[in-house]
Amino acid sequence: MSDERRHFQRLTLLEPIDGWFGDYAVRLIDVSATGALIEYDEPIPADARALLRFWWRDEEVELMAETARTLESRSGLHFLEENEALCRLIAGSATEMLIALEANARGDREANLIGDETLTAAWRRPMQGFVRWIFGDGGWRSEQSAHADQPENGFTIAAAEPDDQVALLCRTYESGGTEARQLTRMLAELSVAAAG
Image (cartoon, rainbow, N blue to C red; front, side):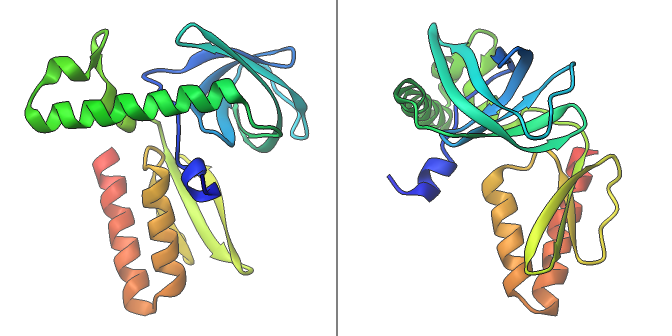
């Protein structure tokens, strides 16, 4: 499996799940094969390295991770090892999502339900605020923002935009000329408007 495909595979979380990062109680918002986005009440050091533990679908997952980025009460974790259980759970989650998408296409809502929620609703979990993507010094940097204004060199989008959409906007902005950059900013403004 290529690194790019692995990067975009995730557990289909309908809501945050509880876990532990070392001695810190955390809530996992997003989990992929290479890392996780966590939120917490007690501050975690920016350079922390610890065992991440959580349960999903009656299976315990444990793996070493380190903080890759931190913003307010959230941190992105980078996994320092592969975990067989996590890879198996992600594969099962991807299969569930494909079944749910097929069920949606057939109009069979019952095959898309877990509890009271649809699986495909997990793709659009409400995330608050915006993310400002700024291009400079040969690369991109992102920052959480409470404001929807567009930066001079880059764009601002809703925090809930999926990773593949963000990657497309970044590629288009970076490789295109003036018109491509204007189009990217227009798409970003639509993302912001849809979140409002």
